[in-house]
Length: 170
Image (cartoon, rainbow, N blue to C red; front, side):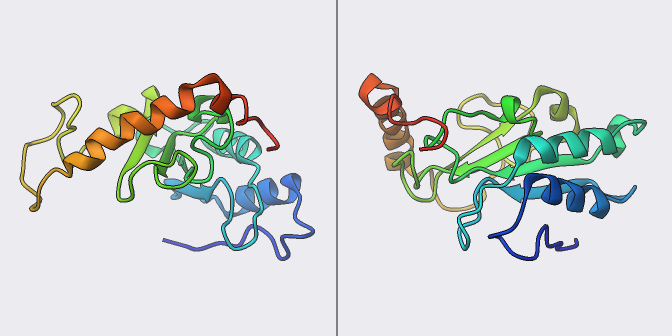
């Protein structure tokens, strides 16, 4: 794993500069580029679409098993703006639900682009749709309060008065 700085100063960072830095950092052996939607320490919103295009170009000529995946930490994206992983060009978007979705702490969502599914091997069975992993007990128990609270948080955001407040640039 390598940690790479995409810019020197967030106040002067540009989408073009960040995308170029990502392109320069991708090697033939790079398998994952991870970025965050918004950097908590600076408030800088990363140019995910531009980075997705750079990753797409880096993947030209690579076999499916050698593809570089774009993984986005979307904790500040989920329910704050009307965006989704497919529209951003991401391969994987992960997000905790405790920020702008107002969901339970310790609960998260993972969105995976359909073309990436064959590259992944689940390590635990989904509580929603089984299959794809060998059942095991990682210890502990299912936090039922989280399972019950998450649909309520989603329903809140589906109400027109809530959804109308979530728009790009908000």
